[in-house]
Image (cartoon, rainbow, N blue to C red):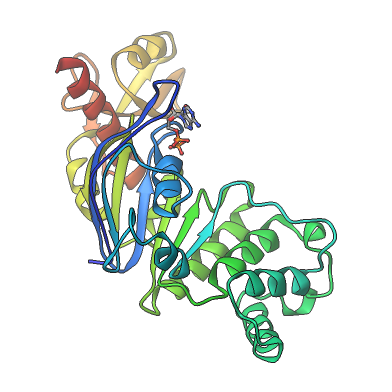
Amino acid sequence: MSISIHGLNKVFPNGNQALTDVSLEIPTGMFGLLGPNGAGKSTLMRILVALLEPTSGQVNIFGYDLQKQRKEIRSILGYLPQDFRFFAKYKTCEFLDYAARLSGMSNSKQRKQAVDAMLENVGLYEVRERYANKLSGGMKRRLGIAQALIHNPKVIIVDEPTTGLDPEERIRFRNLLSEISENDVTIILSTHIVGDISSTCKNMALMNKGEVSFFGSPEDMLKRAEGKVWRLRVPGDKLHEVDKLYPVITTIPSGSGSDWEVQVVADEIKGYDAEPYPPNLEHAYVYYMENSLNRWTND
Ligand code: ADP
């Protein structure tokens, strides 16, 4: 196991409990941490990269204890935070050189080689003379990952990696992460976008309100939604009623008369003309969030 997290709690000074008894065993490869805004993902990421102290609990990363061996852990970690900013004065290649110096590469010739190779690797060699803050959104994200990778870390932590990227850049960035994870590197990717997880992560966790509510593979999560997704045909004046009764995924005109075709997730449907519909991960996510919320309310 590359990362073991046991009984982690974080209570902020203002009393906000951002993490409650979080335990996870994260293997090598790409790991997705999915959850809505406010679930506690960034807090967990910031604890893992030793920027934030947990209130209690243990974290072990490749055999290092996070409480006692922060320095060692920092040397094997790369971090791409959510709001990564570049100083206006640096060109792309200069910025990466700066990051390499910070990570302890003191030999300038070796550094130049490493920087050039990394620029090639993330597809930024052609724009190396451009000021970093003038790059496109996708290029900035790639430069962000380049700085996180420059010291060959064993673990890379990426917070909300596709925010602000257009669909093409999003796919490109995901593929880049996926390629990196093939070299025996652990990548933890935190996101609130289901699509970021489905195509690339072998394992995942779902977080909600500071707790882990699912841990397993995306396929396992999908299985839980089998038989729980329905397609209903609903007259326009009943749409509001359906919306109140069930979590609605999509609503589209049915193409005949004033009826609508509505996809919902639910254990069963009463009083409407419903047929089962094959689930995707988005359905599973909604189903799971609804169920865990219900579970909490019933507790
Ligand atoms: P996510 O990354 O999943 O959106 P966060 O980890 O940012 O979630 O936030 C989890 C919870 O902790 C939220 O309720 C948030 O308001 C709270 N929180 C985050 N940072 C702080 C802080 N510095 N002080 C107080 N509360 C915080």
